[in-house]
Image (tube, rainbow, N blue to C red; front, side):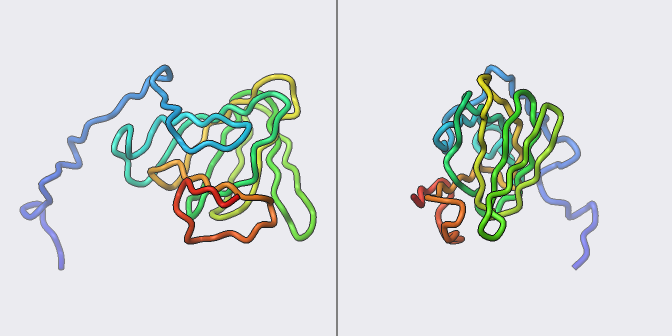
Length: 157
């Protein structure tokens, strides 16, 4: 079935409203992982997005997050400050990606990983996910079987 301008849906995509979220308005009412604080900026709850979630994560000095994954969401990470380390399992060994400000990291769906901050200063990263929610599934280890049916934000530990 083809559509013409005459039978366009009621929502006018050409005249949608841009949404502005100030840094001071970020919400900490998100699913959390030990050692990290996530702040939500763009989501279904904050701006009505349906395909993307975006926010900031602060990793405390000299700490590690718990092992976790982000469900079916793809995750892109931009390092704003600090030198966070991203750890994942490859076979029976841990792989460590050491980063610095300006670096990007991509985390595929369901990949168990953790963030570490070995420095004595907080690390701040900007996160974007292909979901309108900040999905976090906490795990007991990087090698824990991933339950793809776990509810977003559920704790598998």
